[in-house]
Amino acid sequence: MTVTVRFAPSPTGRIHIGNARTALFNWLFAMNNKGRFIQRFDDTDIARSKQEYADSILYDLHWLGIFPDVTEYQSRRFEIYDAAVERLKAARVLYACYETPEELDLRRKVRRTRGLPPVYGREALTLTPEQVAEYQSDGRKPHWRFLLPNFTSDPLQPERTEVHWNDLVRGEETVDLASLSDPVLVREDGTYLYTLPSVVDDIDMGVSHVIRGDDHVTNTGVQIAIFKALGAEPPVLGHHNLLTTVSGEGLSKRTGALSIESLREDGIEPMAVASLAVLVGTSENVTAAHDLTELAGHFDPAATSKSASKFDPDELFVLNRTLMHHMPFDEARDRLMVLGISGDRAEPFWMAVRGNLDRLSDALGWWRILSDGPQEPAEFSGEDRDFLNQAFDVLPEEPWNGTVWKDWTGAIKEATGRKGKPLFMPLRLALTGRTSGPELSDLLPLMGREGTLARRP
Image (tube, rainbow, N blue to C red; front, side, top):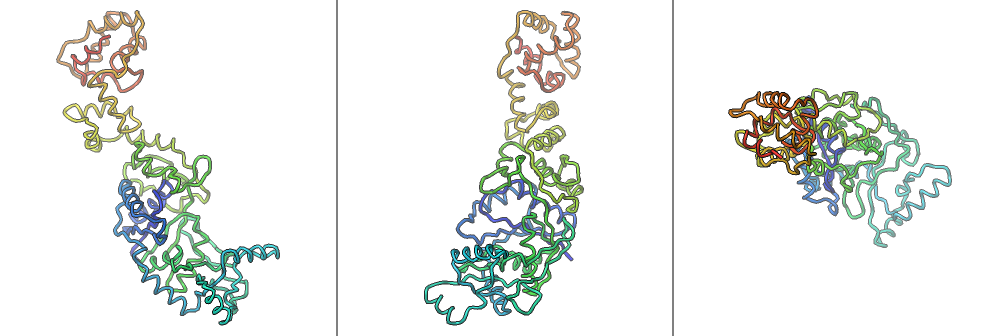
């Protein structure tokens, strides 16, 4: 069997780190099984779905390293869903209902007062032709519900089947359909809710594995029944835990919380995002993978916790620093050029500063210091100023090489008697304007003797 997975967001906003978790779970599963990845936009909600959101989702996926084998839009597939509706009607498992929202709400309240579960009572199945004609003459249009299967031949009996499956992530799962209302598949205006198009597309597109958030577990029980009603075997199903904010709040496309776009604009590396999105809430240690191939080697859906996991943005910066500190110049070159960092000094400069960066863009600040001197020159006491004047008096002559810092500080010790922090801190402040940073032994050859002398206070 060829493994085929899908990522199927609604293009009603920009995806966040939780959505990326689902996309990455599917992508890595396909990688590990030499499978296919379908990008499917569940855009049947015409009013809220926008092409600009679909485009931004594809951009975010590409940034993360996900390149779908095919991209599909549900809004272009209504004829296929229409045909499925006719099949379900012919099988007498899709039935017309004429209740208004107010009438349904009243019935739920009545059922609660009687100690019954507030599910739909299937009253529409008992309507006479005369009652249907009366509703239609009043201008009412039906919505259509799927008749959930039950143990008996009488659809009005409350006892219904339990649906079981072996979940790829959670193990054995059961949904009791007796606790659910027959789901509405088609609205009064003829548009589709999520449930039916999703099942029809999974069948039509040959999806073998559905991996999504565990907020779909109950919905999965319904969808399995629809798969079988359409004469298809359900795919292998897996439901991973959801991510929340540190305070425990859910993530939402509408609020933009922790969106991939905002993380990218904040200078976070894609592999920092991918590593944390995949590994948090699993039995694996959260470490920064160099690429998705390496991350795939640490990915096991079954290693995922069943409880929600809190996503701490501070952990992103830890992973980001790790990636910066080990990034080869070849990977950084093009991005450094965009910042204006190029030429013969670019590679030794990168190797000198990368260990002190939180983000790649931070390199620009050090490049400016290297080229133009401290951005904010330090203030020195009279004693430190005298020391620095003595220090610059013994600055070695050119040519300079990798030992110039050692040679210079040795001469300074001999001339002034200073050593340790009282020697190094004034020099660092004079040369960079900062109290910490890259090794001065690496920066000094890049500054050159003339550039170093220009920093004399």
